[in-house]
Image (cartoon, rainbow, N blue to C red; front, side, top):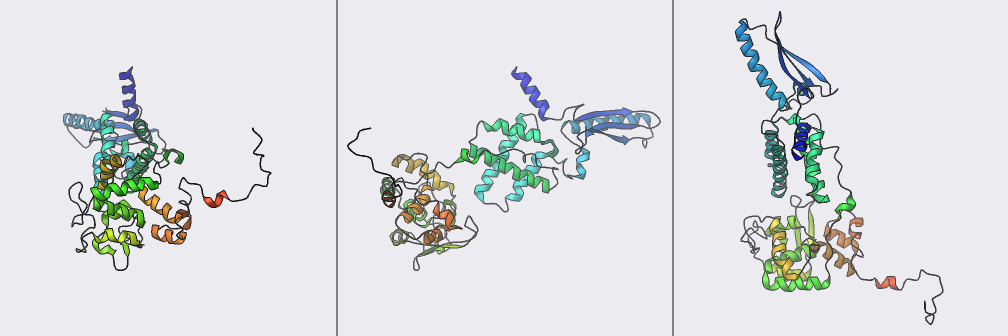
Length: 401
């Protein structure tokens, strides 16, 4: 039963003779020609293609050439080649694996390292799946139809969270949009694949309690002062991990108490200046900021986060958190490094800082974004306790229910 389902799957994914195309046959007579049929991209019906051979005078040579041509054509047809696609997608008969490698080469010149790691991983996964289905490096770009895209996503869906599933859909849409723009395909086979509902991908990250913050500060003060400073920059200045990894010593101005997040570093591509609170100043003064071009947190050994000339990979921040902070402080998966930013914004609002100043510090585009953090603490608001909105007699305390 398993073998039967596998065979059906192979036929479902790959071009099928007499269904998706008709193999070559030779007609001999007054006119000699090779005939084969391929699927018209618009009507989805088989259309006849003819190749005349009358120019070859010798009959034996003509048969030899015809036999060689038909073998080559049948092989290409079995791999998904279709000459009718060339008008709409001039590169449709390019090898698929080579086209995906070209995508990586082009994107590698304009994309940051973290994104490129993801791109390579997505393409590696797709190539491995295609190979398992019987496709190989000779497969043409036009072979990836909507059916292939749906089958691929069906196979990987059970292994992915809703958020990761949506990331897969987003990437493969991006890949095939690029391939369509470059003439490799005549449409995007992933466009009709629906993403998971937003309610299924709600963030598990939460705001930290005062007790959890105290445990964190106490642990890091003795264990890793530089990592503590990094955490405080996220907590007090609301700078994201990827932005922290790209900060240079010249970006920290201790005289004017600001950190400059440059547009080429910022997630939203905007310049911003984050105020350094007085409480954070002693921690920043402990860093050696004497080399302006050095990164504030350079690339060193696993637990070393001192300034250095080589950029640190931002993933090292979360890796150290998972390996050292989480077990030492007994944090669950709902407390992440990025929780520091959420907690800092929430606590700053809770301390009575004007919300427009918090918006500026967080570099939010609107007050509405900042207002999301209002009331996130799991504590009752004292003002609401005394609010009189009920015009109803109070129950007699002497009466039992």
